[in-house]
Length: 92
View 1 (cartoon, rainbow, N blue to C red):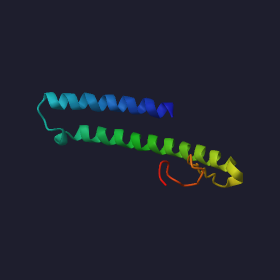
View 2 (view 1 turned 90 degrees about the horizontal axis):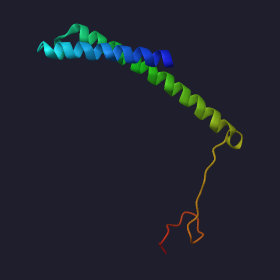
View 3 (view 1 turned 135 degrees about the vertical axis):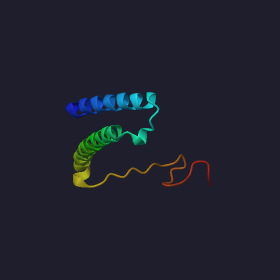
View 4 (view 1 turned 30 degrees about the vertical axis):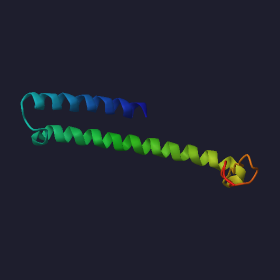
């Protein structure tokens, strides 16, 4: 993931540089084709990064839930001061 982050930072730097030059020249950003191409590069890298992070998070979640109750789901129910399950504290 580190090479992807480095690439993203570099492409964002290029995008900002293009944006600043375009702005200084008084050209609307949407009229600069090079800026739009660079923006798409940055977007694509962000998508790749999100996919990698999401994949790793799903793997970690599966490994955690896999060990709970032999693949089941653990449910925690708290009791109120009254000792009744699901009772709201302070209600009768």
